Length: 156
Image (cartoon, rainbow, N blue to C red):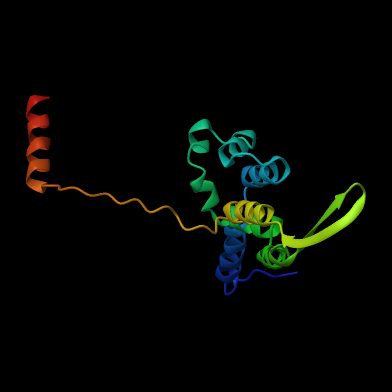
């Protein structure tokens, strides 16, 4: 049992606050559970977990949170993902060809589609893909912007 004194109170408070900061909320837990059990979109899982419709339109806010990342590490640990990655990349599939019940040949290959799909899903759920880059080009004149703003204020 820890005894709180004036000297250690701040340290204990900071330690407890840090632990609480890392803890996932109940809605985050429900959303992750929903994703793990039923798949589907993150937005749909958020709705089922009790998030508002507006919040469900921006699931990135959930997936960028510390709590979500911690839960995902519990549900799909990076070590597990790495091990499965290695396993899937090297697991052979045997295809046997027979004709009239007689063995003709056997081919050993990798199920590339299953590997690709499984890894893609895992990396998406874990948020390991880099965000999409969008290039925006054009010219913006600050003087035109400020003049347009002044015109709006004068006519309104």
